[in-house]
Amino acid sequence: MGVQKDRVRFNVGGRVFETTATTLANAGRNSLFGAMFDENWDLQSNAGTTTTEHFIDRNPDCFAVLLDLLRTGELYIPSNVPEKLLYREALFYGLLDHVRAAKWGPFDGNMLLLARSIRGLAPGDGTAIRASPDGGCCVAHGSMVHIYDWMLEEHHPISLDYQRVNDAVWVNLENIVISACERLGRDEGGIGLFSSLTGELRYKFRVSHENQVKSYTGGALSFNSDYKLFSSCKGRSNEYGIGVWDQVTGKQVDFFYEPAGWSLGEADKLQWLHGTNCLLVATLFPRKDNCYISLLDFRDKSMVWLWSDIGAPLTDERRVRDAIAMEETHSVCVVNEYEDLGFMDLRRSVGSVRWSSRSRLMKGKMVDEPCYPKLALHEGQLFSSMNDSISVFSGPDWVLTSRLRNSYGGSICDFSIGGDRLFSLHSEENVFNVWETRPSPVM
Image (cartoon, rainbow, N blue to C red; front, side, top):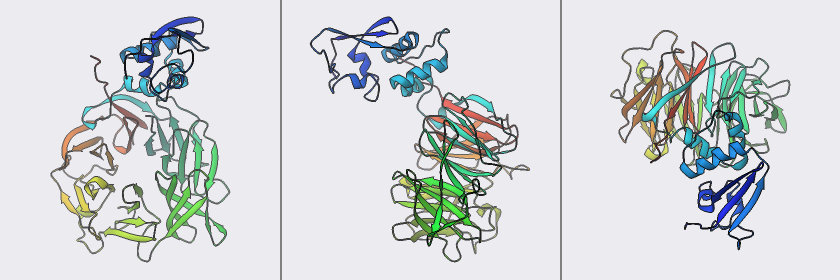
């Protein structure tokens, strides 16, 4: 993009600002300013004049802050400008991504710092925490789900009428899907799509078989890029399976019934694998006496890969607490209660675990009333929680490279990564922590 000589003048709420198209180009095509120019960042109207004035009926003080951000890459908020007002104006101009990028840097597990601790408002132990795509989150405590935007301001909470939350996923910034232990309300179905802004239940995902609506409990959730939602399901008569729905319409599009001798319906974790178009289904210890992990191909209703600890020596080390597929390395990573990492090769039709204790961070067994380890994979780094800390593993051999720890709040019962933030939910003090990377200095 060449240097733009023409100046651009804005009258914002009565105050006049002058800048250049080159500065406005820093806003990007998805901004309000991007819509004002052609592909060469020339004004689409009045192109023959040297200076063009546009009137915008918005707050001039906020416009000055945002224009300075486009000029320098730095965010300075004067004391007379409320942050919430600035964020609202940034949303209008399509500059929220620029504001977020100026407040914290790109995600790197080895450079994360504790930015904030937030006490939960609901009684009872935390169930789950899920990061939103823009750096907000939702926190489930029993039957309540509390929603926080990226500014960490709480929206209207979601109440599930005393039904305990099993899982939650963000479909997009405006919608969240929640599964519960019982039916949501009097109608059949244990999964609903809710507005993240108002808490309104927009529709329920129902299970139909032979033209009859079935009652079921929703479990672990996952979704793919084709707007398909997956959930483990348990019927009234202990029928198990994986339901598939269209996220946009809420209509059921498929169902995978549990094969004989395999436990799909009580799955603790689902994960969609984009490269292989398969679904990882994991039933973990101690929910069952044995652990089951499989890959399902919905194109021909087949199980293309599986692993179980049935028939293996009865040792605590083999009891899998969490599992995650890593498509780039064609493997599945599992973790036991000692934070030993195990790896299985997806290129073999039947899995076998190669345990590695060199990554172990904690010595000895977990403390009383433990929070079981959980795994996450983000931008080539592997994360594993244990007691009150999160270990970060990097490189092809998954070497322990850093440790995130904050003793306040007790053990970590869940954590989630999204929007360049890591959120950890602690069990004892009803608190969740927010970890961020400091932005790079502007030269």
